[in-house]
Image (cartoon, rainbow, N blue to C red; front, side, top):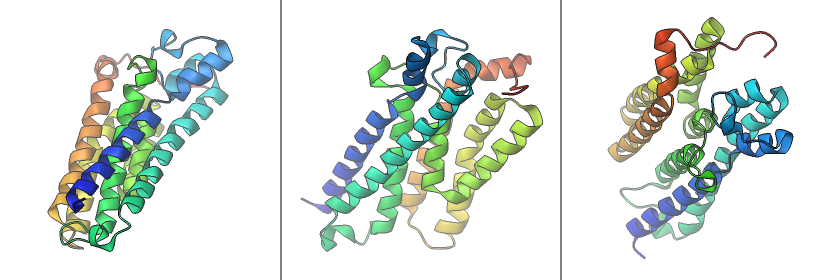
Length: 236
């Protein structure tokens, strides 16, 4: 099998596994265990951590966060195993256009983005999932720790200032591709000589995920503009 065909097949397998893992929605699962109800019929109707916090409780919300984060970790790690397993041949592992390290990084982006898509549009739950914030955060952490630090700092400052999770989430989704471009272009592409296809992959995937999260938050954006979005207050 030619090298390019192996690369494409490995990325497709990584994407499929990432999507299927992303579809395991812990907000739905835990709410059904605790209350025997569907979280999508409560509160904001979103199958995510914030709605679980408001509608079910702190412990289920914490477990939802952990579960949604770890499923993306599993998706990304499996993509690395798949790439390494399929590239056992040195002739495939290192080619002039696709060094192994950069291919592995691209696989992380593909698997992570697929996990976010699976979380938002889960095949197991009628394609009605969450908004992808926790899964996207895990993806960012596992694909580029520098971008993750910039995103988490932005989230922390905005949340401490306004106490509104959706505001911080929307801002981070909008800035994610910007941070990715600045860091990958000036450090990896210009500084370390990474190829253009890696820059395009990193920026393209980050833009896709950022726009997808923003689209899922369009109702929140409307409430933010009208000053109707509720902050997290009190003991929560």
